[in-house]
Length: 196
Ligand code: GAR
Image (cartoon, rainbow, N blue to C red; front, side, top):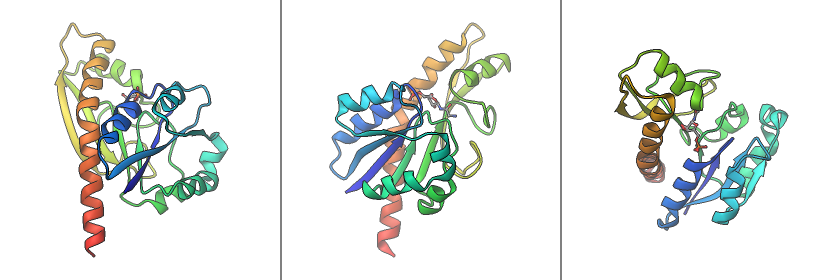
């Protein structure tokens, strides 16, 4: 059994989609949701899914030790960021090498970095006159949106598309691909590391 924690700062639609996907997979289980906001809607989703959710404040995320202890208590093997807006503490990065992934709602390396999240990204893509946008799934390191890219998928951006239209297309790609890619990464990781 592989235990997964999802980090989410807000709405949590990806968190819910991923948890539902793995509820039908006996080897991988979403067992914890971690947020940095007590009022994030992801907590409501967690309640509905029957998954415990916890909140840590900014200084907990700067330090990392209390969160790391919780991850160990829940025997977390793998961490998924889904709409999580803070940096992952160094202590957690060091404890989970190649076991933390993020999804970014654009085609990195464009439209990434600090302050580039959610609707700001789609607004920037629109203002940049891009003909395409999409999703990027990547490993997480100490810099925003700079870890090695694992997977990208794109969608057309029409001149008439609003940032909201782009967001809808991107969300569709996220829901379709993120759970499957997470599954692949986890299976490859544990296959490789158990074989050694
Ligand atoms: C998603 O589109 C995700 O890609 C994006 O935030 C949204 C969260 O939606 N993440 C970032 O912008 C990270 N830089 P959700 O809370 O409904 O899953």
